[in-house]
Amino acid sequence: MCTKRFPVNDGGGVFFHLLHCDTCGKEKKIGFDQLGERHLRYIKGLGGPWCGVSLEADQKVRDTFPGEPLDEKEYHTFVEEFAGTCSCGGTYTFDAKPRCPRCHSSEYTQDPHGERVFYD
Image (cartoon, rainbow, N blue to C red):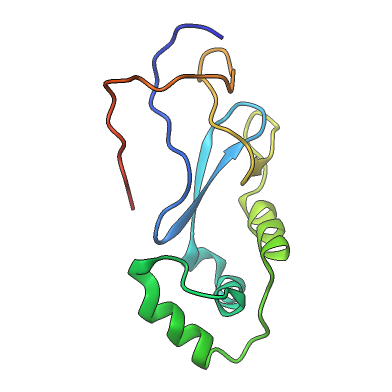
């Protein structure tokens, strides 16, 4: 682990997933709108809303979308395949951790004075 300071984005948003490369840590956003029917099938299969902000829209999908529900494992596999491979040759996955852009270590500590930022 080196001493480089860098911002880390992790998780996803209200309208997108954030995947990281399993080799270099580069991030890739995948908008739900890019995933089309597969995302709607996933929403239909959820037991509740994706998040509080999308509560009404998600309920409408569960009530009216005619497609078959898609489980999380199938959905994650589809999203990861959709994301493709990174320019470094690695694979974008939900499980890959952010990495240092200099040394590619996934071991880092949060700046105690840093702020947590929510984005979408």
